[in-house]
Length: 149
Image (cartoon, rainbow, N blue to C red; front, top):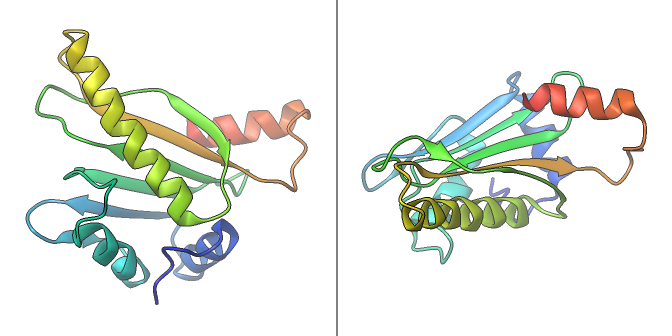
């Protein structure tokens, strides 16, 4: 099963069906290690020389316990120190869009940190906004950001 181009809803449902809330891809060696079989297609795309994948060390995903939002963290390289970067709160149609954005942003943060003379690697967090949620509600925001924190 290749969920690379799947909608975020489909991706979240697939992860939930495993009984887990968390999933990861780890870049150690020539082949990515994956937490679940449904990530094999994604690992194959990235390992085949994908334009946005640059030997990233880790891609981490979680379904929020209270909010059911897809939460993600991307770590580019930590040779200069722990991954550091901000948090993006954005809407995505597909898992591919979210992943490509996280890969590019985490690599960019690593470059920014190096250019600034900081001994930090590149990292980026993402909260995938949903179209069916009213984010003006303070309880919704509390649940979403609480899940990520």
